[in-house]
Image (cartoon, rainbow, N blue to C red; front, side, top):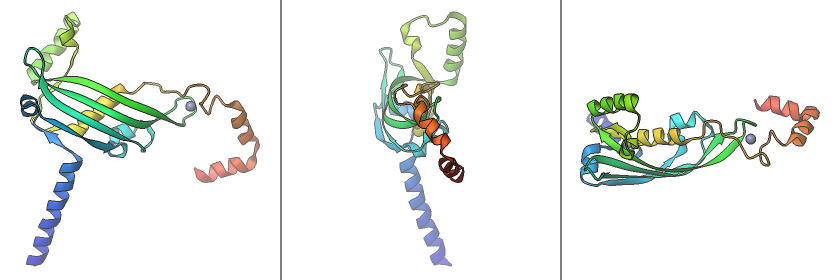
Length: 192
Ligand SMILES: [Zn+2]
């Protein structure tokens, strides 16, 4: 009995450690105030919302999040993401390698400032360049991967398509040849 309980506690500790590694959380204001930095690599397969729009889960992304402040001393996060993922070509529905290159500066705001900013944008548009920075809620328990996933999703092209010379759908010859071959059709049916 005692043995079982100890075992369970040990297991939980290991699970917790793995979870912490996979999903880093930061206290965003503390992180910015102390100019902290976090970086790592995430397999695309671990980002479920991104996965929804991809052709397949291969690829991985390297990220860096740096805390800091702008000229006025407002806390912010500088987010960088590079890597590749496999988008779905809207013409042939095949996989299409996409290079992710993100450099985003995100101001940390409380909810009241975010609401004010939103009505300001609605009323007057962007008065100056500083206001064109994206703002996010200054969360004391910010889910870093969730933030990165959002930035990646925002950066993706709306209707990605291969260049014509490499797109399967544009290669009429191959498509017709496959359609004429009854075995190819059978093989296709079997696969699906
Ligand atoms: Zn294509």
